[in-house]
Amino acid sequence: MPRLPEFDEARFDARQQTIYDEILASRGHLGGPFKIWLYSPDLADRTQRLGEFLRYHTSIEPRLSELAILVVGRHYNCQVEWTLHERFAREAGLAPSIIDALRQRNVPTDLQADEAAVYTYASEILVAAVVSDETFATAQTTLGDKALIELTSIVGHYVHVSMTLNAFQVPLPADIAPTLPDAPVF
Image (cartoon, rainbow, N blue to C red; front, top):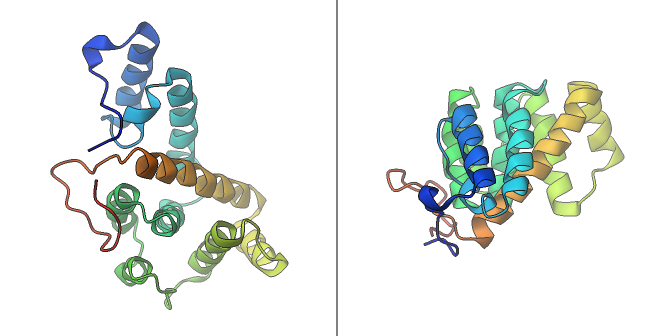
């Protein structure tokens, strides 16, 4: 059960209603951290706009974005983020063997060059809060400057998402079974 009750739409103030409507229009549903962020409508607004850009409009192909998101979700042991994005990663063409390795906290062994660059970069920045010169150079050469900046932002944004989901114990939708074996289910 979430640590904060979901807002009753009938009790939204004008700003919350506006943000709620915008999120529904862009995403089709209001789930995950949005129910928490709506307690602070301006935060919800700015975060959802950044999230929409990072998820749907970067120069990074979805397979690689979803790989980075799964690396973050696994690092933070975030059941909601992992479970929802596992499906998106499969739909984007990320190999099941890579997803399974991440789920088991193993280093995937069958990564393509671009996947290896994303995996290594995201993993290093999450663990050490910095990346080595070698990792940076490989990612920069493989992805390019623009995509590397976007990748860094994707990782940072989904850290924010994971922390929100875990701290406020946001549950999965009732009709979705958890897929991360050792992560808490709220």
